[in-house]
Length: 612
Ligand code: ADP
Image (cartoon, rainbow, N blue to C red; front, side, top):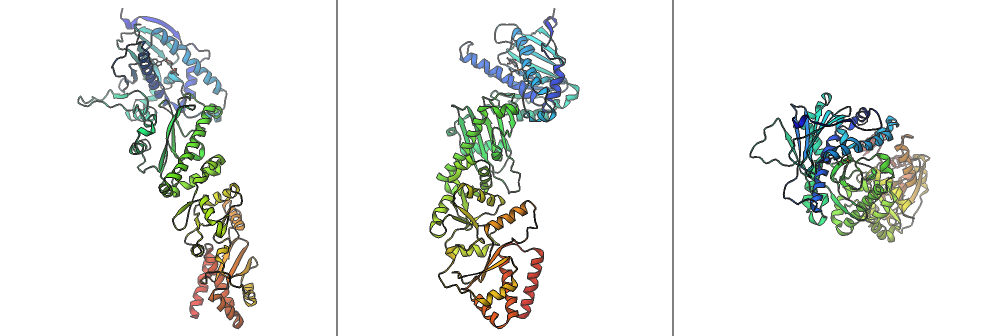
């Protein structure tokens, strides 16, 4: 009798839930691709086990090379994953593939079956049902295996309904071949490009060499096939062994991003927390580009999922990189991640490492850090807003970009402000529009921070809460004492009268003697009312027109104001025209004109030209 035909055993997969296979299919429908990961990682495990036996001396160590081969035979409609690992005896096969593995699956399904559709999405994208996930795509599965022991080889055939048969096998080589007979409706898994993409996604860093063979293609004889994976990924190495170029190369390869990352963080923790990873801070082309990064989670070099926010807090999700958590089971659910202390410790450690890196860059490589600050600051500011602990850690590494192009730490700014404007940080939100104010401050040696992105001002509000006594003031919020001269301030009654008729009720008139004589008048809006107005605009409340309260400051040292005062005494109408025009000019450098205001201003300007 042919060995193949001799039946050893017949049976049905023993499970205590009926119709398990249809349930597997239903539940895993959207994540079918993972079957390949499950089978290939089983193959890698089988090799690892064999290696261990050799290293323990249970088995004689040999020089042989271990490999996993994934063969596609589209014509036959099969996909085969073969390894030369530990193999299984008949007893092991029955024990592992007919009972135990599935009982895990049953528990899993029990846990989720009762839950509604919504919570199904809460299960993270990828979880495994181990070996049984092959039934999502196959209508028949064969396992042909020979144990490393002297036990005879065995062949196992299982239908999609869970009916199996075991035969003696004539396999002579140690190891296991899992042959999937791809179901008619799953033909896409017989496509070379689909399989290559799946291998790239799930198996690119598996610890044993994987080769892909397309049975339809004659392999070129002189070409030694290359494994599709990198068995020693960079994150497993010691940071001291890796060059800067290797880090960049790894980044380019994984993320297909031609731009160099701004910096990287290599985490190589083994005690008490065991996990490794490399995180990159990407360079974004412009601020409108999507800030979604990509942090790939691995379990012992086997890909699990992307962007798991339990591992990387949401505010750091612009990072790109890899994190390998060997203490995380492959079959993870959201609720598991949310309550697992290992996961929260990993997450906390990542946050700490990112903060440490920023502080180290700030302290040791200030020039480089300052150069990338414009790129990273929105993220750092956002992170600080989201997590006070993160702020506490990076507090000393927060820089202010100044309007003159330099940058200083916030602490240094406050230190140097002690003499002139203690506890105040002056900032501009628009370098061009606020140029006159900036020039006035700079002329008196007061540095102005550039807050030209919406998040900057929100961050300022937060800083005021975190740093007691510190105030952030836009350059048009008040007249810094340092701008004022010691000259006498003469409050002209004529000017009060003229401006009283020109200015609306909500504009207060004030006189000041500024050091800079060239500026006749400036318009101030208090920081509070401007922020309030900005907030209203942000939430689409109110028109967002000119803020309610403003103060026009007339500079008594200015010759123009002097002239205006004289005119007010001689020609009331003319003085009013001048006052009105001056007010508009001061408005112009305080904010952007509305269409109507701009038209009025142009009209006045033309009328003025006519008079020249
Ligand atoms: P898990 O891998 O999580 O244990 P599986 O259902 O994937 O669950 O596999 C069950 C068991 O079957 C494995 O633990 C292993 O003992 C055995 N097994 C599966 N594939 C192989 C293989 N290629 N070689 C040897 N043993 C295997």
